[in-house]
Image 1 (tube, rainbow, N blue to C red):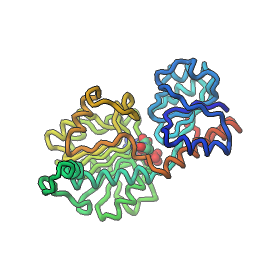
Image 2: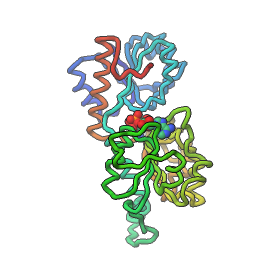
Image 3: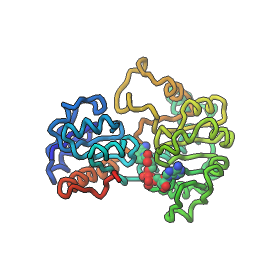
Image 4: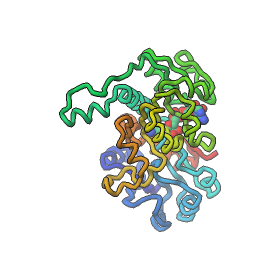
Length: 329
Ligand code: NAI
């Protein structure tokens, strides 16, 4: 099987080539952008290997089908970058990596939470300037807080397990209760979690129903001075509304690993003056906002599991035409 690989970091190619010895597939590492590539670039490949930055639109699905691509293997858990109905219509199969290390994202989430509570961005900026005072650094203790988790699936459950060690009260909302964490969390309806949380953490997938779940109207119902953490998807939040809430003090701190307009710059080194995302720029300048560039998954264990499962998906497709991680229903 000939596979065109997108968005592979230089430090991953060694591991990818090592894994591939087991199969082996004919891999080609693309040095061009998936989203803007024309049909000719995909000709001759049976499968493409993508990340969340690769948008599988209706047009792209049709283009891939015409080029002869049969399988799309996304090495991510989330699937909101792929129009699944359009893929199905075009006759292209697709698989994801539903579980590579929920702990990686959960640990990063708790790290962002603690950094926000202990005003770590301000402290690090002060240390950079040889300012060893305590000005503006008085923090908050997690054990005294009520933490609300929206989405208690694989990642949310790991976050809850870690948080439970801090002694904080944990409340949660999900469409389905997760038995694995039921003894650590009190399930409430969405509005109760929203209004009762000192810290609100988003761990649900982005769907049509929950797009901009956190916007002016929902922020208005949050506790004054609440802390907002999003390591799920940018589309869950209205970032203009978050900026306004940070500026007027409604939200005391926010940390996020995802941004709804991240595709143009993510995984690139961008010149400061040419950075076009004005809202994100303003958010990044705030001392009480921490932004990480969609990297909460990026650990050794997660990457190894992710790559191995993506290969297994390709192998299953090659052998059977089906895959246990198929996402097209
Ligand atoms: P999962 O499928 O195991 O859990 C998601 C949970 O959210 C489910 O229990 C589901 O019932 C619930 N849910 C769905 N819609 C909801 C809503 N409107 N309100 C409340 N709960 C809702 O998924 P997992 O593995 O926990 O991942 C969650 C999300 O995290 C992914 O969909 C992805 O968008 C994001 N993610 C982010 C990463 C990053 O690097 N920042 C890496 C991996 C995933």
